[in-house]
Image 1: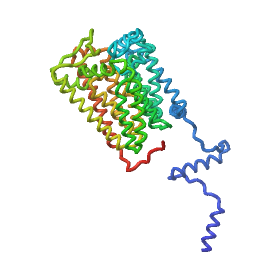
Image 2 (image 1 turned 90 degrees about the vertical axis):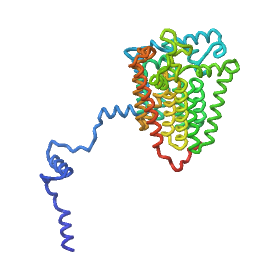
Image 3 (image 1 turned 60 degrees about the horizontal axis):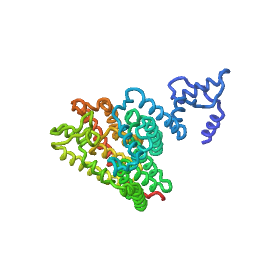
Image 4 (image 1 turned 60 degrees about the vertical axis):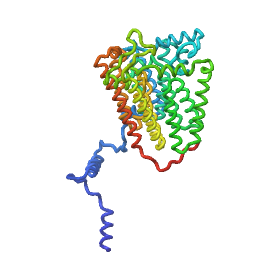
Length: 453
């Protein structure tokens, strides 16, 4: 025992052995080189530092809230102004600006919509038409403002990835983003979802009001509103759901009742959409093209009385009934899944899924409906469910193959154009299936305490 202590004391006072040169480990080798370097007169000891890499610093700046948001908004504006005004994606030969200009003149001449002239949209759609009409520049700036609002909501919902993905909106959708008013309800819906997720004081009520306004611009935000309500109920927030539903109804009635009193609303609008044939680019139309027995309504010079081209006759009614029933079934499935899943990601998946279902299985699938899907697609992709958004992005890019420059090839029933539309619609159905599957795979928590408020 004493010998061991003596040996221990001897080792404590001994000088360190020189560094070994041989098969030493990584750390031992480094220590040896450093010890040898310290004995050199020209080598100064320095603390261990990690030099900043310029690329990483730039990436961090793009991800931080203040500089990242500002830079992404600037990028969206630049891409919007360049892509939609110059180059192959700037074509606007087929747009709704002429129609908006006609409605603008009717409104400013004192005529009442629905009563004095037919109007196929809900009343809030009158606001941008009354303000800018068919002015191409003003409509572009107005829709750019809506796109930025949707981008800010995407930052809130999906972080920097979602915010930067929205910069691709003008590239994927083309110039139609500035010649149609569809980004208005899309922006209202995105901001409403951001309020539900962030949950400031009165957030549910504010979201319900925005969804009601969006519904009175284009009808589809009502489906997102239904998803929000059942999701809240599933989380045990029944009172918040009741308050939201009440606000939705009150705001919708406040907008619609005056037009109903003046006359024509909503009967004129409802009759218009019930009577119009299957739109020529819809999924139902792709099925009818394969089955045969229908004819195209209208022609390039003079469209039908529904201001579009469609397919009528033969099995059109049966196919339309089938796709409408499919839309109802898928909608109920998404509502059931939203009720049983309680995370923010589940809400966003269900909202995105019901939007895709409304587009893919609806009676009409106009190219501008892409504006409804692309902003929530960016958020869902940032939340990890990328298959559905990727299919939507591919469908959007494919749409530009024929719209607007080759749209009349569909009207003339050219095989390549009809086939391209069918592939695009198949991509949207794949996006819908992938989104439903992702939501179904989401785990069901045994219990979840609802947030305060």
